[in-house]
Length: 174
Image (cartoon, rainbow, N blue to C red; front, top):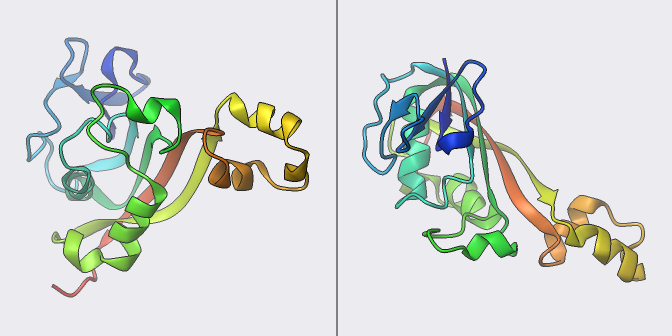
């Protein structure tokens, strides 16, 4: 089973189950309310685009992904990059950045992962905003840097963060 979290009225379709509060959702549910309406270890793949910044607690969101995901479940989460203009739109409750993800995943996992399974951060990349091309055109000192390097260091050049997680057994000592 493939689940899209917060797909709204523009969900992926094509075999994905859209979970959202809108009337067009396949499963109408507030993602702030746990447990979500899925059995433990019942999901093979999870996708969420521009949703995690709207929930009350991103760690609870990620823990719930791990609860419903089977070991090996791929989780892709997209959200505004912290320096993107979309990061501070009304209705967003917080910014979810690479440093948030690293702190939760690497530096303090014992504080955040309490269940039998946890999401393990496998990859991260940035998607560009229109300002990336402008920066490359107007700032000659950027020549030779990759787009990912520029987006990481030059505010406004990244549009969104893309986090790739995998559900694993939780080996964190409680």
